[in-house]
Length: 385
Image (cartoon, rainbow, N blue to C red; front, top):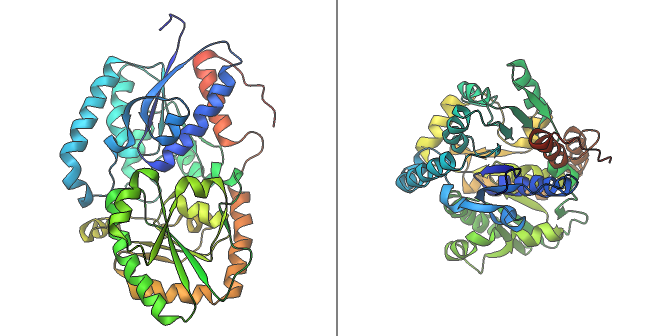
């Protein structure tokens, strides 16, 4: 490394964060070419960031973990990997760090950076407005907090944090799903069970029962398509009945929009992607019963689906915890599939959501990359949209 070379550490903990970090890295590299400098970018990498040239010191598989009780079987592996990562980061301190989502992961790495006065930038902060508000203290350690939601930014600023609303990258993309012509003779339902192993296994188990019930109640053909990432495809193939479900690679969905009539989806970023496409959806998820009970005690938000939170009202059905039964999922789905007015309403709400998630000027990834360039090189971006 030359004496003038800067280093930038990326910390991500899940698939949606990997895709967002990859967009930021791409924009950073575009701006970097104007400075004549070459920054070493390294950190926790996923498929998207690897494709952008991020130097991996750990992968998403090494740090993947979510839930409460669900983490227990993986605790030893995660603890070892995270301790190794902390040691590596301490020996290879960067000039700055970009920490995307995954609050529990960032909480373990942030003190190392803080002690050495390394500026850390947070993108997609923890949902302190929804539950566990005490976590807001950890956000005070960041140099800057970039929020993807306007209501979240207001909350953070009210608590004295240097938060900036940059918009959501999904609102700047073309819709992934087409629901232009609803064919009453046959239906296609997309399934988004989650990106983590325990989420996929638990959700696919009761999605399968709901699919069987729904098929018995209608006379037309119904196709169920599971959207999977490449690294989880083999696992999903073992869990699903190939006669009941077909599999669709996530990369293929990103590459070209497909036709669908309804989606079943775990709470998370995918709910926003689906809603922005105008496709009707049921947010449906089961966790370990103990985890569900803990969340019910700690949660302060009245909604869990991102589209409902942004709109400030429950427009998308949420079947979570004890309410998430195969019978109820099948019944709610049939009601939506037979309701042309509701499907029209979903398409109309897609524009409302898109307007709420965009800001004037540069797209989110470019704004964040510009901030990083200024931080590292005092370079003012002159890019004009």
